[in-house]
Amino acid sequence: MATILVLHGPNLNLLGSREPEIYGTDNLEDINQRLTALSVDGRHHLLALQSNAEYELVERIHDASREGVNIILFNPAAFTHTSVALRDALLAVAIPFIEVHLSNVHGREPFRQHSYFADIAIGTISGFGAMSYELALNAALDHLNQNK
Ligand code: DQA
Image 1 (cartoon, protein in one colour):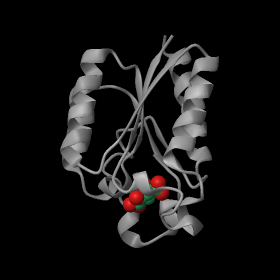
Image 2 (tube, protein in one colour):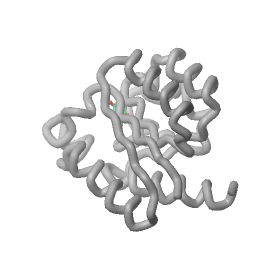
Image 3 (cartoon, rainbow, N blue to C red):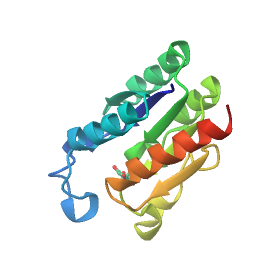
Image 4 (cartoon, rainbow, N blue to C red):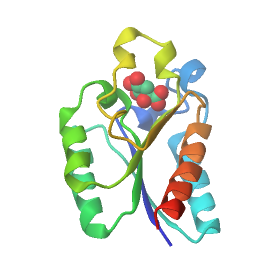
């Protein structure tokens, strides 16, 4: 059994109504519920947090280390392109993580094409809408299986 933490960054609480042509119509609860159902099927434990505050995400990452979280699915949202603090938190706890984006950040504005996380993540999944999270969960479980 694995413990998986899903972290959603700023403005993702508005999913469903926020720029639906870019981010789709599923809301965050829909996404978390699907991830929970998939995790329960595999007898895994899924924890989730959305925050608009960088320090809350930093502290959640610190706590994850104490709680024995095995892997993190992280959509840092706008912090992808700005946050050295979140990068350092992930390096400090050394919990493997997958970077997730709903939109294809590489097909958008130039400032979205730099990530503070891509080079330290196991990998990045970007551009599949809400399904990006499900693909990331599958990839995370596969990674844990191969690194037992
Ligand atoms: C995002 C892409 C980011 O550039 C943006 O700031 C977000 C969402 C995505 O999931 O596509 O808020 O991380």
